[in-house]
Image 1: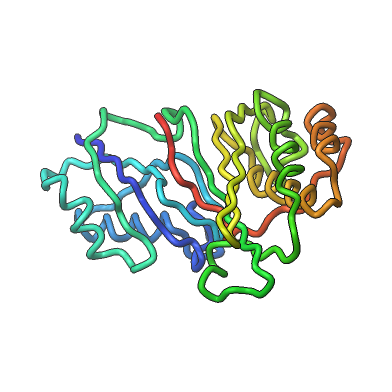
Image 2 (image 1 turned 90 degrees about the horizontal axis):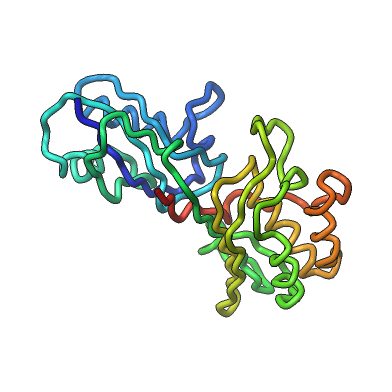
Length: 244
């Protein structure tokens, strides 16, 4: 039995998220369907995590088992021929038997993109959050420093989060500006449900002057006491990389 690992890139606009679910088409369902056609047998993927509806990925990792002796290249080129234009296999690799990306992952990198243009842009609307008006980047970066380290991020998750603990390690929160585009890169060991989007929404409120960096520090020091900012919309978020 072989274990194959896929590195997947996708535009999540038209999907109900990564995970199989009864109320909408998921990316997992589409990829498993394509694999079943390629291998002539049902396949169940083990993913490194899940992304919500509308969220994108450049480096989602998923593994599966098969006894088919087809060339490794078929799992990239062959599978891409069966997938829709908004989902692609970037690469395929042989892995150790039974490899599970969810449990083997040691860290993830998410990038959130904000469009700061005065007017909306049709060309970036599906990959960014349009935020009008000036943002105080110095204040946002000061607030971001309070979000690094191993901390209790209970204030940065949405209802329905089933995590057993809200303690997470965030290694870096980097804010970069390039013209009208602003990116927030978040590196960490793992994240709660909507954690990155709530972090970004909170940082934008700081940039607008509606919250202070000290408020963010209080959110982390006293989880659940100080209210968080809004949850940033999904289309600006992209899973860049999973580390092992």
